[in-house]
Length: 561
Image 1 (cartoon, rainbow, N blue to C red):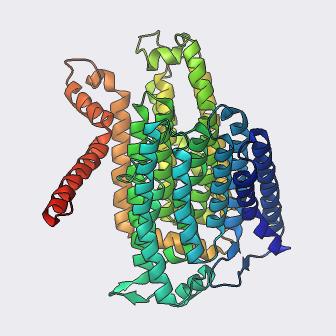
Image 2: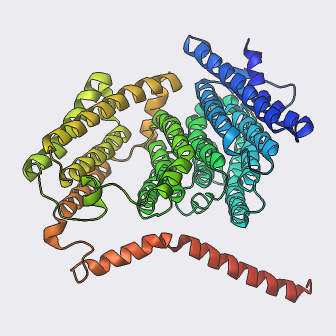
């Protein structure tokens, strides 16, 4: 029965080969074959996932050669179902959306090939298969992004994405070579077992798990658009919308998969997790800030994905690996639906000249004064601080009391509290006819979200990591000294509460966009910096120009040209 799982990644591959060989000139037939095979692949993936939920054991399917194995564990099975489901939605959407585009059958063949490569990547049971599939994802994505040769911008940024991916592949190759040399195997289960037996193997005087943890994190940063390696993501919007949906839902999330696949290694790579937390935190803040100033809906969604990927990597850096997988899946479905619906939103906006009058629109966008009808500020502030703390405390007390002793969970809850408090502050600032009803609705939503978060993350973690000791070791590896942790929490609390107060009292402090105000110059400077996207792309462009100039001089000096 387990050997039937080999069919799942082979189905989209066979569909791609069939379309390229026999259906190049038959649009309807190509689309039907592609959708049918993806439907079958999704049903098989869901079947094996359900079979594992009912008690089936992990299986490693070996090939006759040195490499080419598939690892049917909870991570690969749940990602098989997720990837095939997202791909099926994109395929169905593309049937009508791409019908007038040139190369219609070729587009479906490339979608099938991308799906097959991703399915192989998430289920690879050895390092060689994983590295090959990781590399091929970037290659196929290049052809999908540059599908229309009449759009020079799409081809240019597809090449930009390809270069970034290849730079990020180098650390993964080095990590694979180091692991093979140090533990004398290409099989991932064998390597992880040997790391558990002897995690203190040294190379060049450095612990191998720590060194490989840094290299794998760097590869994940490039694939998941972390800060300084993010510039390719927002500029790939010139590609077809279905490709954007598949990329933001299933490809850019690969960093979270890589962390989870090598979770046994990160149990002994604490400093690599601290680095991931810092990079993810910076990426989440920068991506969210850049998202807010975009005037293009797809570019805004691109920066939103950057911020969400930063939060996903931050979760890994805190040791909350199962929560990162849940975030990966939830964000994938959410962002795919947004991209697939972005065309309709743009078309509807073109048909209507303006936005109908609304209190929220009037107060937030047009900044018009309206008749105030708010809760007393002391009541709003009390609800802002007390309600999230009470909800978080009760939910975790009833679901998993021991989680209060794990620093990573406390940090995640702290950020949840910050997000909820910001939502309550924003709601209080918006005047409504019935402010108590508005506040009640937001509080109920907040309670549902956090109870859902604690329940889902707890039981989802039990499925992905049934060995509770493994999850505890990950949290322990991500922990820092108690004094440093307490000081960090106090500092973050001071910064966030100070930010809330500045936002709440910005009118009286004259901190805003009013010309001549005390902070107007600072506001313009920050806006200019964000509008230029922190000048990161400009620095890369200038660096490439300098590199080309020196290469020309070098060629002249050697007499090559």
